[in-house]
Length: 454
Image (tube, rainbow, N blue to C red; front, top):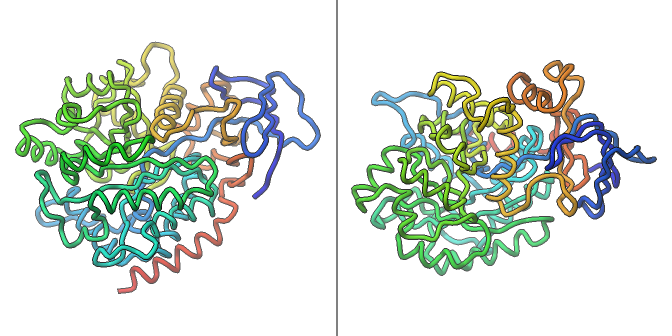
């Protein structure tokens, strides 16, 4: 990877806003100083337009390997639950080597699109039949190796999964590779900590998979196992909401707030189907909602009430979830467009008049995503030197200044607007392609040929 100790940027988005002629010095992968209005020094990497790398707060990396394989309708209709059945059949065949190869491609594609940190909601833990690996966190170690290979920052979120439905229903045979008891999960978590120990700026949290997969007693016991982020799938489908009400008499988010101390460490992934009281509780808690517009559209989940949530100070970030298509700009664009289609208006998520939708969406997802992944957001002294260089020669950015650059990238660039990406001061994407893409892609193709042979 190409390394530089100094960067001179013609235009850069800092936490306080756009700045010109900025020199950033980097030491040991972190920003040592930021000088505004400074001249470049000999040896500096020169960048035209720079923005911070975005956090991808929710990924199931291995699902990149099944992207496009589930787009076939059923006689009685197709939905999340039928998709999940196909996903489990894919899971049965995955080896540790295969998981690493698929994750490496997914992470390379994330970096190419402008994501520089991923929250890996990691639930594929065991060998076939549910047998633990000799190294309990073998699969987590493979995720860590894929992050190391590509350079992406990792927030690892090992998943606790114990049941097939509300009321502690026994797990399905197809879920065997996912299942843990509390003691086994605690051991898995400690082994996962060792697996990421050598990764720079790695963060370890936990993820109770969902209220349908974790009993109340198990939830109470696993929460003290971490001081890091806590992520949970919640209220993604109406069927889940109905089942939760049938089980408990309460809606999922309502039940969670009544039974757990939800605060700013929490990320509520999807939270698509919430009522006004639940929305207010999330805002007050300062938890982050993890929105995954491409996957939510692909699965037919529904549309989160962002127009009501965001102006009240609700925090959100975006994630690529199933990784059916990995594109940071598209996640933000589809988030806005879904609201425009729902409310039949334009620029509906900006909190006040005359605010750029691109700037607002980008910064909100930057701040919310960083919070959800356990790090600080933005280009500031002490932060990792992670930034995205936009292509000043791209037609969608022609003659644009300031926030119009973000609007051009997010709403008007068909592709190719990301020129280079730097992670810890090292160039990991050059002219839109990951520097190791050829090797990573070859390993991915070999893995898929084996997985899909029959």
